[in-house]
Length: 337
Image 1 (cartoon, one colour):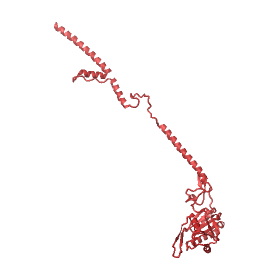
Image 2 (image 1 turned 120 degrees about the vertical axis):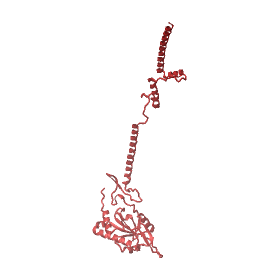
Image 3 (image 1 turned 30 degrees about the vertical axis):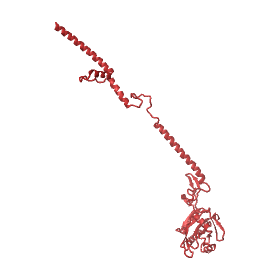
Image 4 (image 1 turned 180 degrees about the vertical axis):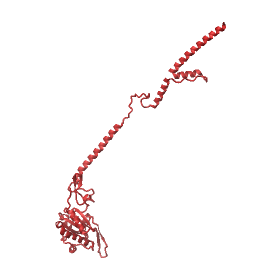
């Protein structure tokens, strides 16, 4: 009887214990789901230092979501959306955009283009007043003579002449000398005439006589072939040795050459000033003990039009026929504009 009672009590006790254990387990599970961190700490404290403590249960879905949110917040720091939801109160674009930069570039290009167009227009107006003036214009007056410009459908172009686009060299200018009769002669004295001007000296042994004879042949050829043009041409000889070429010496010298020549001389200062304007080189050479000498000088014949402007230059290498051809070409030139 005692054994039966004991067994009954044990059975009741074991049933009661198993019910309480189930209740405690369910409560612990609910606590772990709500507060996983607190439950973990509680289990670690209750287990003491024993190595037989059961392992912690895996984190619930709520705990994984919280950890993922914290991790995502680290990667989206500074974006204004730490939760990664995509809905923030801040703009994701900066203060400067590509369309704004494009508008600025277009405005700058328009301003530069307008400036260039306006500058060219004003320069063209100013240039038109200068180049079309009576005195004309030259990019370098020391080397190129002033030229008048005319406006064509292609723009401003130099007034066409026999020199072409290169322009005339800056040669010649006002001068004054005396003729064989002692009369004052200037460049204005030959206005309306085409002139063949040569610089030399009466004691020249060979070159000067040869060049003067050449010009005489040119005059004779023009007389035969182009008598009308011949009447408009005047050959001129200018002495570059005024110290020895007196009026009497030049009169004697003139007898050996074409009768149409005009012989001129003057004071050394006058001759030097004129030679400088025509870029004539001259220098004493081979001076002897008795004072005799030769003069090295440029060998060029300067051809001027009826206004006194340079029309062409003829060098020593040119034949009389070459000079005649050039003279006729210059005197009969008709500009196309």
